[in-house]
Amino acid sequence: MQDFQFPDVQIASGRQDSALLILVGEAGAPDALASLKALAPKAGAWLLAGAQPTLVVAPKAVKSPFERHNQVRKWLAVLGDAQFESVQLKGDDKDWLEALAATLLARQLRLPSFKKDKGEHQALRRISVEGPELDAGRLLAEARGNALARWLSALPASELTPAKYRTVLEALARDHGWQLEIFDQTRLAGLGAGAFLAVAQGSDNDEAAIVRLRHRPKAPSGKLALVGKGLCFDTGGYNLKTSHMFGMHGDMGGSAVALGTLLALTELGSDLEVDCWLALAENHIGPKAYKPNDLVVAMNGTSIEVVDTDAEGRMVLADTLTLASREKPDLVMDYATLTGACIRAIGTAQSGVFSNRDDWREALIQAGRASGERVWPFPLDEDYDDNIESDVADVKQCHPGTSCDHIDAARFLSRFVEEGVNWVHVDLSAAEHKGGLGLVDTEVTGFGVRFTLAALPALMK
Image 1: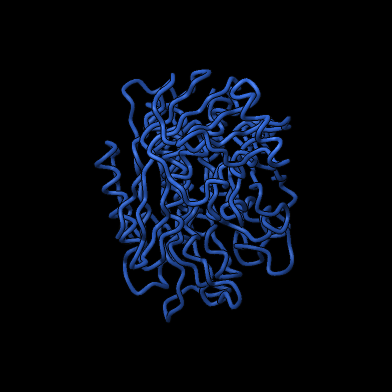
Image 2: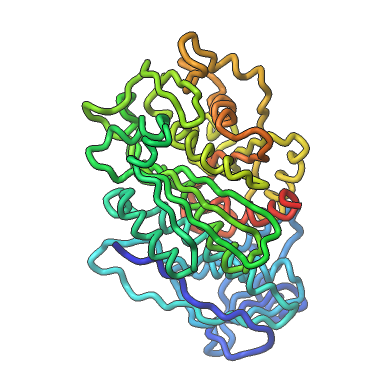
């Protein structure tokens, strides 16, 4: 398997020699800006200043960080595949300079490639800033966390089976000082994790597991649990995906976001005690695979009537949420590429968010706006339980007909969060967005890392 690699980039203040010069706004380069305006109406083009390539950008009024990030990504698209060892940013607008630096960092990820000729790649080593000082530590931590989430999500299913995923996690744990604990299928059976094991039993191996990673600071200020859906491949099971199985290697995107967030918090030296719970499995077809109308009992004793084997994500998350919330953290956040209904509701430019704290709704929206990873809250009212009421079990896995499945799924998951525990569920409808999204220029977005870092100060106080 290829190793995750992200260059060590130095972000420093002051003028230094650079291969690429980016001039920002009127204060940055009035003469060059005038030349740019004469060349093209768009705010971004190549200009040559002697032998040094120079990109001049003219910031325009924007309503949100998301709009700024989108604009910067389009500016830097002018670079094409060109790569530089060092870049000089010059200007006096901190917001635009930060967006440029963050986008330059996002461009450094090389997604997994298995071509014979991968080509050479010049890694960025230094970003020099002539202007306001930037928060280098935060920019780098966000970029690495997002890059890890994207890299994992892009790996083919043959390269990231649950067993291979565990190998990756063991290496990351060693590198970052995390404690690692494996809940294999034997251990989960002893705990009564029937919801998770129902999905896992379709595989002809014993690779499925719930993995717990722990970040333990010396003087913790709070306790956070991150939970991620890690379906390394999803066939749909007996409710076979007949039209959209291609791309289902990315159904582990929630686990990648949880892991990327753990990495970012670790690199920031967070004083939060963080547990990262990853539900790793595959959803296969076979003589032992679970079926519609099966009845299974989850770890917390809830009986579930299976309706659709393609609703496997909520099954593996159910027992994982129980494990995470039994530790009584101050907050549980889970991430999952969970429902097509959320994509149909809001598209792929934002993600859906749910919480058992109604008073957090505005804070979640503001965190999405501030981070450039926008979210939209959906209701979690109890009357939606009518959709998943069962005649033979405590709950139906999902509604058997047409329904607001993203809300049904959140109501289902809420039954597995221990009483008194604050919970946020992110339905990652923006996990993939054609052409890139915000700062990120790849279709796989790594959405969620920046949003979480922006949300935590309000949610953990």
